[in-house]
Length: 241
Image (cartoon, rainbow, N blue to C red; front, side):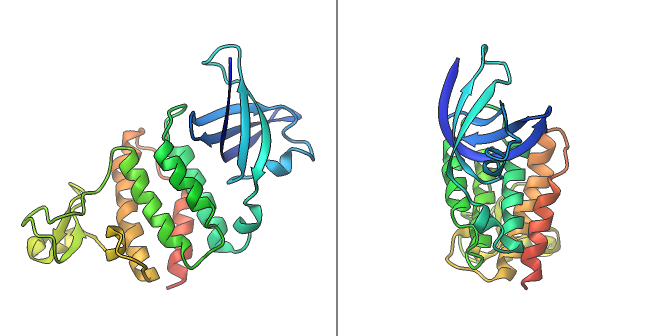
């Protein structure tokens, strides 16, 4: 059996003397692995860089087999990724999270489209951290751990929302927080989609999404720690403060 799709390269590792095993996040077939024959050659190896947009043809005798890929480059993002430390750290964080949390062979077309848009912003350091934060928020939503930031969980108010409950993922207002304020997570305006944001707000937002990635999503996958690449990206954002 076989299929053809386009996708974003997540990982590539050597397999035997001349081949490589790659993971690609495709629009129609989700996160999918396969062998690329000759993947370590001088012709193909430069194509197999994380973030690269590929046209892939997958073949296997049976659906449950690992199978093999034939790959054709559609768009390289290497130049943008290596334009600076923030871009490289951001690329590494996003592909690592996708490889970490997406179920194998399960399509997620909505988050695929958002990932493609995020990748196309690589190198635009003024807007990329905010785009990445909103992508993490969308990733949590896609995988069943979305936050409800529409109204206060305690009072029902839609104004003065500055916290998120770590237990429920719902917004909390200043009045609703009361004596529990120091136990709540920050809710900067940028998490609610309110325009541009300074790096201080983005860092606060990453603290909140990171909590739910670490304490909700990761345990659902077997208590696996988050990829270290995410922490390195957050560190790059904090360094800009």
